[in-house]
Length: 87
Image (cartoon, rainbow, N blue to C red; front, side, top):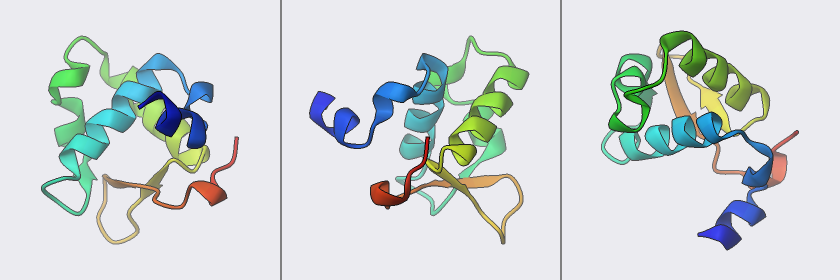
């Protein structure tokens, strides 16, 4: 797991960003996109405030780790192209 994190350069994301990213990955296993309402209610993020989660989502999109869906409002998917990630 550590090797995967290093390869994807996840050492540069905060703990909260990592938790949000993991929640999105977990939610994306059953659906094409992780929806905002499901992210907010995910068990990994029970103790986190809504504004903090939204800040983490915005940061992850800006870092190109998450892709915000154009067709579905409030939906995110994991960026599967690590070579295009920017920090």
